[in-house]
Image (cartoon, helix red, strand yellow):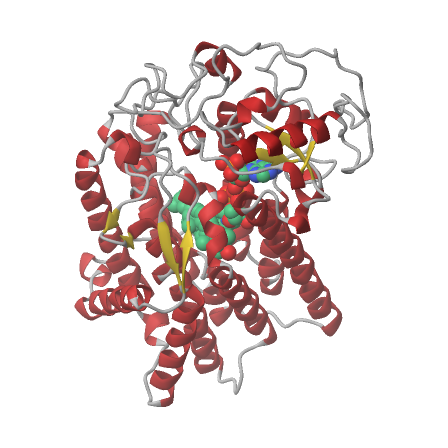
Length: 545
Ligand SMILES: NC(=O)C1=CN([C@@H]2O[C@H](COP(=O)(O)OP(=O)(O)OC[C@H]3O[C@@H](n4cnc5c(N)ncnc54)[C@H](OP(=O)(O)O)[C@@H]3O)[C@@H](O)[C@H]2O)C=CC1
Ligand SMILES: CC(C)CCC[C@@H](C)[C@H]1CC=C2C3=C(CC[C@@]21C)[C@@]1(C)CC[C@H](O)C(C)(C)[C@@H]1CC3
């Protein structure tokens, strides 16, 4: 980012690819060698109040270091070992990272254009108004074709495998089922009905409208965050249906057909998204999904926030049909277990898996606003990867533990049961606290509740938390999520690898996601990010990784 700043300090420079015209990193005509001056954090024409505030912040910054706000350690950034080290007194503006600012002195400026503003050295930066992507993730063009074919095949494999009496690695499903077995009109109808029902709940004028993070255009989209309401209404409806004799075990017995139907919907949706993205302007495109290669862009997603009027397709798909469907399928598996094993109540293992995952989903919907500061919503385009992930991958692979338990009971001793519950609670605590801390900080950096946290300013106007949860590791939320994943697998025992599939997949997903995020943040924040990484050395597991 630093390179980009020196070569093109103001966002209105001609090489600003997407009409960046709201922020200026260096005030024209000003000495660029000021000592730790943070004035580059402000909009082009700051108000007098803003100037006063800025000066105050600068003064505070000068007297702040890694020590908590208030303790005076002038000009002493943290060394890589977390020790305080001396830096030369005069520093160029293009190295803005090496000081810590108390969270209370930060203010979000309307520098939305810089949120994903590219630097000249950026690998995924748009080169011109075409917003073209040069650095390709996921194995590039060939990789995209591989994933497009592999992901549906893998889901099919898992479904066939979990349905076997002996789902060992050595016991592969012998033959594919006949083509007719895949398709069932009724199952397709149920999938469509479920999605339409969730869409109806989404558009109801119930619940608050939350603001997303600033887009490159500076605009902020509004989202109807009524996910918890949708969950409650869905639960009431399902309970009423079961009460009136609807047999939910249909979901267990038609799992393959329901998955095929959802796959078809996700494929049609992806095609629609790809076609409509052709008319999306450069500012509406995701920086990572515009390579010009059809397969790659189809997979990654070209448009950042495709909407039909106010209906946000990405937000809806990520948070509603698949996520709530996951709980519905788990419940169906509990009923199928009772039926298949002649039980009066689900087994302890099944209850744990159901309750744990229900808690995870309900928490996500309760804190739905927090999704607006995650990678998917802020950076990733909406294409096959997310459409398939949301509508097929989540409901039909995240439910494999419950599915497994239907035919593979695993009794738990009381001490093991207690230990698993404790593990889940620890994981949940880390996950929730860290996600909420980042979300609160991104929404209001000067929130008094966060004033004890130390931060690093960056050239974008945003800052990075460097203490609290985000000072322990660079992705504390992933750590909590992984601990929870462990607690979801343990109730299934160690007889087979299949129920541990989620854990293995999740480690791979989060390690890859972490590295994607690292490159994205390095691109955005430049030297400030390097400083953060030097200070917070571990990515996910303290002292290990
Ligand atoms: N169950 C599942 O299948 C999955 C669950 N998840 C969970 O979803 C949640 C969201 O994950 P994800 O979107 O991947 O990533 P994060 O919520 O961690 O978001 C990453 C972004 O946070 C900001 N950020 C990073 N470091 C800091 C810092 N020190 N201070 C302030 N902001 C910082 C950056 O964005 P910026 O600076 O632009 O604001 C960065 O791009 C996680 O809890 C994860 O575990 C994720 C994937 C799959
Ligand atoms: C198909 C690919 C190999 C992988 C697709 C990945 C997607 C399934 C996940 C990407 C990020 C996700 C999140 C959640 C679900 C899985 C996907 C869509 C999430 C909604 C689950 C509930 C959490 O509380 C959350 C934090 C809101 C999650 C956000 C990220």
